[in-house]
Image 1 (cartoon, rainbow, N blue to C red):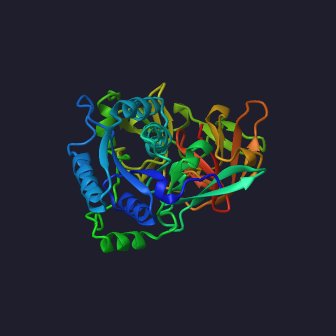
Image 2 (spheres, one colour):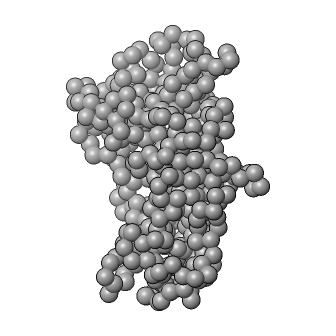
Image 3 (cartoon, rainbow, N blue to C red):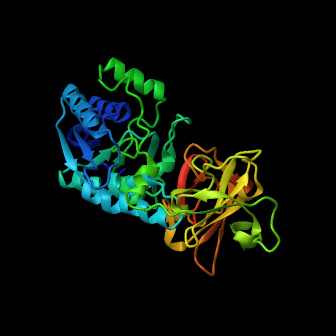
Length: 393
């Protein structure tokens, strides 16, 4: 394989987040004999845009410092806030403004943890970076060259391979995932035995290395409220325009105001997302209303009653050529895969259909999927290996 240094001479920089997973990752690497350095990423201190009334990064950085001290490893904090604002936060605002729903966690891994952070770690002389992700990396050799496989975590309830769906072979070559073979309960048990302060700490539910975000308030700091009509679509309207894939299956719907009835007023189409139920503030319907379409140009929001509304369910999505990413270039011609369109969604059988005209691909599921959302990521697998992904158009 490619690693020629003995473990005792191999330097690994661990992204210590102040949580139990990265703490145990550092502990295991130290126990195996690696030279371990802990780095905490400070990703936000822009007072002009408030992420949260709280300052979770202060507590997290302090916990990370205590863990590093317990493990007797070097520790420092690095400020990546400028790059985070440019690559993640500004991108989020732009996507929501255009009526799309970004996934900042996937972007954070691609743009921050395994790009900016990785480069800084390598500049410190690191051989690898390591994180507390529940996924696995395997190195195989093909035609004398190493290939890196991104595999699901063995704890299926915590598998985070989806969040790493945009990583490249170069990034995987320099990455380690020490807890990917463990169950969450095992990780906490190891932390308790090692007397780590993070052993019982709750998992973070917010943006990576930032914390909890109240999204509506966050967006309103840059995107001004703009009142518009909420239109309910009931039965499938005549003359409904559809974009179709090569097999004639529905890729997306194009609604018009005259296709439905007005149900209320929203505060801005750019604040909402496909499949959203809460936040519409519209009552008087038999079943809850779900967002089924967003038009940020005309500032219109289309809704339908019930989670089984016909417009929420489609079997096909499209990915532009510029948004297509192959983790395994040698497997880019595979067509029969298992895929998901959101974290923790069970993998579903699907077919990749090349669009020879535009250069992108259609991803067609055997079963219809709920709330396929532009801006989100679709990821596809062979068995438990993630081989490709793309941004949903």
